[in-house]
Amino acid sequence: MAEVLTQRTPAAVHQPEGNFLTENTGLLNWMFTVDHKRIGLMYFWTIMTMFFVGGVLALVLRTELLTPKTTIVSAEVYNQLFTLHGVIMTFLVLVPVIPATLGNFVLPMMLGAKDVAFPRLNLLSYYLYVFGALLAVGAIIGGGLDTGWTFYTPYSSTISGGVSIMTMGAFVLGFSSILTGVNFIATIHRLRAPGLSWYNMPLFVWGMYATAVIQVLATPVIGITMVLLLMERLFQVGIFDASLGGDPVLFQHFFWFYSHPVVYIMILPGMACISEVIPTFSHKPIFGYKAVAWSSVGIAVVSFFVWGHHMFVSGQSEFAGAIFSFLTFVVAIPSGVKVWNWLATMYRGSISLGAPMLYAIAFLLLFGIGGLTGLFLATVAVDVHLHDTYFIVAHFHYVMMGGTLIAFFAGLHYWWPKMYGRMYNEFWAAMGCLLVFLGFNGTFIPQFIVGSRGMPRRYYNYLDQFQFLHVASTIGSYVLAIGLVTMAAALIVPLFRKRYDAPNNPWGAASLEWTVSSPPPTHNFHHVPVVTHGPYDFKAARRLEQMESHS
Image 1 (tube, helix red, strand yellow):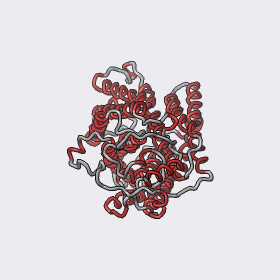
Image 2: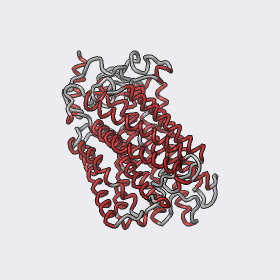
Image 3: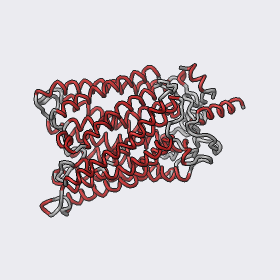
Image 4: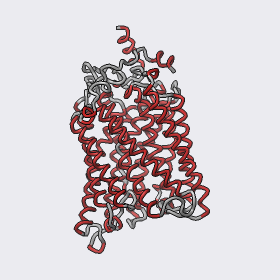
């Protein structure tokens, strides 16, 4: 591995002095920092803590489902646990994980900027996230909330417990997301380096831009919805209460008008990571740059018009169902554009199977299954049969974890040397990827089968005939957990071993963040960089690097 790195990268191994990790290391300096890189790392470790909690809850849920009857927890606790698992993984992990961590860390450097446009606003976004997370999780734990992560009325508007505090937590989390989106949009528009035109930006930046647009436009809807739910609970205003002239289905319209675009707040950043990893490890420029860039914008636009496919059985008209079905098929087109362009980039490329590329390939396979099963569910007749079954659970996880989190792992391994100045253990990183891939499929393929046979989701007990598939799914979840622990060890252990020091550009990449030291200086660039080649022009980047090393 070291020989390959030396051949690709004549730049020297980083010097630890004078980087953002070693300057001003006191706790207060970190707590009140406005450095986007430090904020990105604070987000990272906070979100990973949430991910650990949500993962442990998932293992408890799967262990309970080993048997058709009571195994380790009661029915009431089971309902509370899957509510907590859903809220943590959806709103506290999947939504912020890539924009808040990788986006915060590398986006300004990709643009040649010293920081985001509004550094103090960036820090405020982080503390709003922490405060909102404490409110949401505290409400569920303290109030015994068992509504599920969708909080459907009339149940959520009538039960006692922590629903009101939970809605306040969601409201605060929404502000964190909106402020991050505004910051990224302003940064991309105003802080690009000389020579960095729109069609010269890395595709990761395009993905972050499309995501930020959805964050700014869609997130206020869920904030308003939470306020309406709070008013319903406190003042009985009758917005969702049928006995007072309201409509409980209206809550579903509000909720899914936000919550389907939020799927793309999760997946678009993942696609953005894949658009960086595949060309770099294929040693080829991205195929169809403009098509991939504008497909991100296309997904962002169409995502606002497909919320009704969550409501095919809610009583909406057949005409509305047909329209939403058609639009759901349409949104698959820009996603397909991305996949085919990634495959075309890999075609006849000199592919290096490092850990980032292994996760990228896993993403293509898993997200492909998630997207294909999404087309099944876009068909009204099929969806009516599969609605609220374990087939939906499996589809959702193939898109969200098989898409967002696997892509995040690809990006994390890709930028880890830049973040900490340390390479990871390549062998154990590859083993972690293999175990995650096998465990993930072992967990959710049985759920496709059991769901197609009629097993409803969110059920505490089930018929004996479904036990074998539930046992297989639970065993798969244990393998998945082992894979995640292996991945974490492969990343963290080398941080304490100097022999893993990373070169400035271990992958031979061409975008601006790889032109600075690893870890980067506090202010990123000593001089304003001038962009002279594209983000995937690897030959030009290599020539420039050689010239700088000789000088």
